[in-house]
Length: 613
Image (tube, rainbow, N blue to C red; front, side, top):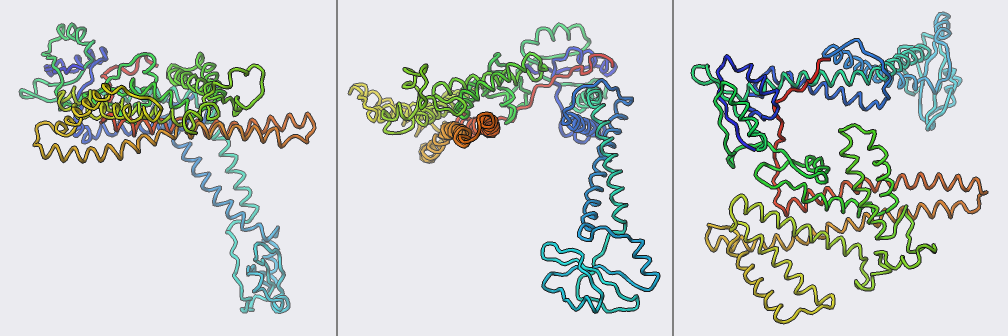
């Protein structure tokens, strides 16, 4: 990014902003404090939030386009839709109350309030009571002419018929009915349900057109807010005759911007942003790693002065997803669905579907290596075409004997974790060298070299390998130099005791943190294994539980069990395959890579509404 400083004469200011917006490449500085105090801007931003919420509600209806037009636009349409949804909420709330009232009538059956009124006219009173079974007394039947109407959940529902002047009553709870009759409540419920249905049908009919209209309206409001935000970042100078603006543009746009500014009556200056400036971030990645940018943005954008982690975690994330899914059949399903939807998808969705294709391919590869296909353990089936292949599947049966009985995929997961952690530490060293100088990175580099060489020196003999003595001495010498850098170069510019104390604390954190981080990667093996086993369990249930059924009925039962079981398993695997790779990326990898984040997205001042509606 290049910083752009502008001075504009106040009479030319509005026209210049219009021209600058047409260029659409300058991210204008925004004064957050002044923006927060600007009531007009905050009102517009609140309006945008209302529009976004309404668009979300309409999109959640998931209805197909039917071409029905709406006779309202902009704010009028937004208010109308809000009123419709508010009315729906009111009806639902009323229905809940009425249905609770209706339940009160259920134990008593059908009775007429008019007949009760007739009893009152002739001097008798019908009263309703409830009491627990054990407290009901039979003598009430003679004393109060009581009659049990219903019994539910240990309660007796009974009525008494007594003269109006009789004040004595049974020792029971008087039952109070709702003010409206049962028939009236049922009628009201029916009316409200019809109204609710009509509103829902109407909203379904206008959803497509309403969404387009609201998106257009949101863009028009956005143009207004853009100008207001620019105003918050501007400064009035020289008796309010000159307006100062600051912003940032990508380096590759500088030449074209200079040509434009040279034709305007403004003063401009390009400069390099200083380390203390909050510079916007524009991620630049190739076609593959760009697909993973939404994952980066889910956590935080990198700040301008650090490395973009996207290209560094993208291959790992793809591999992690495949390991967590762990089944080639599921991977094939993911790839096929994404491939089928890609051609008809909107431009906004194509990136996600392309990412899904890559994740599906990674899962297929892992499934082939481990011999798992829709829960079928290929190493255990006697299929002719698998002869000569089964012995190469990466399973405990084939390779456990070489790993002291450990599952090879667990070992692979730990090795991948160690590689990513060391890779993250290397990125941390590069970052510190870039920001502060090479000597600030020496301690981290020392740790990386020590860990690698220690692993080779003491790990190789455990696997049956032997290092030549001269090479062993060279490793010891290099590790000694690295230990010196770790102890005395971890805090450049500070005293020996400070460095030594920091080294001790760093060693403790490294010993505990590295072990915990590495063990976290075992989840890659555990999730993949769990998904494969659960898929196999559903296969077994489908075929073993239906043995005694007739052929046709058995085929239907097998199909239903497989569809239901694998759907559940696929859903669980998908959740784990997204959540846990993100955790390993955002926690273990980001921590070891010293990722700070906190960057703000490059958002140029540009025209939002391209054409008139």
